[in-house]
Length: 448
Image 1 (cartoon, rainbow, N blue to C red):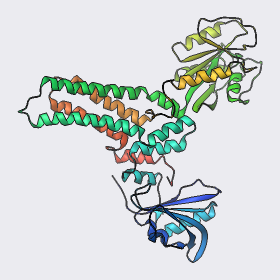
Image 2 (image 1 turned 90 degrees about the vertical axis):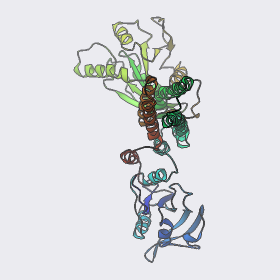
Image 3 (image 1 turned 180 degrees about the vertical axis):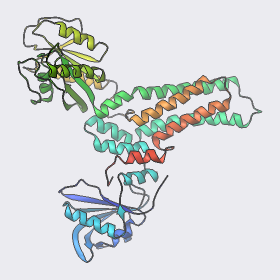
Image 4 (image 1 turned 45 degrees about the vertical axis):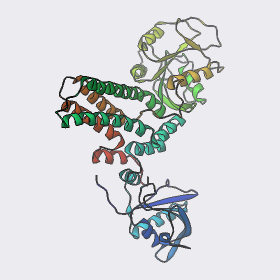
């Protein structure tokens, strides 16, 4: 895999004014390059790693900033290379001038994600951990932070490596038999191989089952608010968000398009989608809104079906009952402050968007759809990366091929097990193409 030993530099903090800006310099010559432009009580090359030195940065003979330089010597750094982190005053122009001085002294501009890529190539982290870095940066909720941090410290790697090691061990036994054909394999030994493979298969299936849960904790529970016109859908959206996001009137069909927003319930991200009321209408624009509401039903993780408790059920309600059949639904009887005009055999939560009655109970109900009682958010992460899921699915196919070939020659079974190992290795980067690595790190920012 392509790796260069030149020295790279980039601004690692967001653009704009602040308390400090940090310029990261990494590579074999990072320390000597920074020494060319740094004036302090000590030369950077004279200090040991994990030390910081105060001094000035020069551009030619002119001082352009007072800085603190942190020195990290290989391999004890983020990238595994000699690294200098220059903490400047947090202006825009002075930071750019310091970076320019570093580049003139012999470094080059880093590419997107190149620091993290070097950390991966130097064995400081595996590929799933590197992917967790960008996920952690992009986290928008507590649960996303927990999932990303758990993956960053090796939670996913440990599971995948454990599975891979088990397959390697089984394959090694099979290869030993192949290499010594005079020693026939006993039937009980073959039984043991296949029992172990069945156990591995079960573990992979369990990881795949957890994917949807992991996706929800990472990106949010896609929650659709649906119901007939004037049932109180937009009022519910405003009530849950605790702000007036949607226009609410007594006029039927006020909401004609999708309104989206998000909130966090006990650390879990919830993507709320308010929709046009479902009813038969001749209004062209409203018709489009109604069709869009129906199209969103199969794409949702959870449906909040809002029923108007102050009016008897009608044909529009019955149509919606049919549309949401088989989906994850919380049935809500709104306007609980008024006399109820119907009863349902289904479990229904009574709420009032006017008084706030039942809203806290609704928060709890939504949360328990997203998070199972048995598992805390801060525990080991679920598989939540689509690339990882696809690799696991391929590994499972290879395991199934091996299991279906009980009467086949052992060398064919060994090929399937080798394939399974390869797919699992793609998750952690043990076996991965340069194209995949480039694609992953292209999503990173410059300086990370």
